[in-house]
Image (cartoon, rainbow, N blue to C red):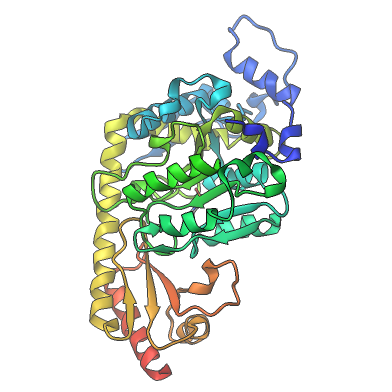
Length: 425
Ligand code: PMP
C-alpha cells in the first residue's frame, strides 16, 4: 500500500515532538536513570493522594500513593503500555487481523488510545481529507461524523443502503465512473475512503451483512480506497456469533477501525481506540502529540486496572450482561411500537446498538412533528434530517433510543406519539 497518497500535506508534515519522545523514553527507562529532561511537574505537590473505586461486583480498584502519582502525570501519546497491550490481545482474539505480523511500513496492525472514538475519528478525517476530495458513506449516518466531515470540504458521495447495510451494487455503480488505475492519478480524484458503522448503525440500528462486507472489501482493493469501520456498537450485537469485522479480512492493511468503551464501560471516562496500519496510526499519534498530548492517564489507568482484574473472560461476561439489558430494552420498545404505532409507522427490528429508526406513514417531513409538537407532549426523539448531509431535506423518519427509558415510559411515549400522528394526518 502507498499510504502517502492518502495523507494531507498537514499530516505528512507532522514530526515527533522532542519532549514527547522523551516521555516515551522515560516511561521505559531503568530506575537508575536520573532525568533532568522532562518538563513533568512534581506529583508530590498535587493535592490528590489516593483513590478507591468500587466496581459492581463489590471489588475495588485501588490507587495507592505510587499509582496515584502515575495517574496524575503525563504519559505516552499513543496510550499507556498496560492498556495498549490488553487492547492488542483483545483485537487479536476478536479480529485476528491478517496484518499482525506484516513489516511496519507495509501496514502492520497497530493501536492507539484516543479520547473517545470521536477524537480518533476526527483525527483520521483530518489526516486524510483535502478540500474537494471524494469520500463514500451510507446515509443516514451518525451526525457526529457528518459534523466532523462537512467543515473539511470533502465531497460526500452517498452509497445506497437497506436494512442489511450498504448495497454493494450501489457502490459498484458509483465506482464505475472511474477505472481501477485512476487511483494512481490524483487528478482523477478517486474516493479516498468508505466510512461506515457496520453494527447497529446510528441511527438505523441496522448491521452490514457479512457477505456484503467481503464484496465491499474487494471493491476497496480494486479501486484502492481505505475503509473506516466505526464500530462502537460491536459489543452490543443482539445475536452471536459476532459479525466478522472489516479488520478481520484486511489482507492489505487498508482498514482503520474505531472502537469505543463508551457504551460498555463509561462514556464520560472518554476511552476509545483506533486499530489500523502502523503508518497511519503513527500519524494519529503525531496529531495527539500536539493536541491533547495524550488521553487522561487517570482514566486510562482506571480502565486498565479493571480490564486486568477482569481478564478477557470477565470482560466478555460483562459485555453479555450489558447486551442482555439492551436486548430486553429493544424488545420492550418494539412491543410498545407494535401496540401503538402499527398502521401509523414502519420500522425494522435493530440487530445491535441502542436505536430504532422509525418512518411515519403519510407524512413528507417529520421534523416539525418531532421537533416542536412532540416536545409539547413531553416526548423527545431526534428527527431523521439530523442524519443526512443535507439537513434541510425532508425526512419522514425519526430515531428513538431505548437505552434509558423504562418499558412503561416507552409505552407512554408511543401512546402520546400515536395521538400526535393521528392529530397531524
Ligand atoms: N461513532 C458512532 C457511530 C457513535 O454513535 C458515537 C457515539 N454516539 C461515536 C462514534 C462516538 O463515541 P465516543 O463516545 O467513543 O467518542
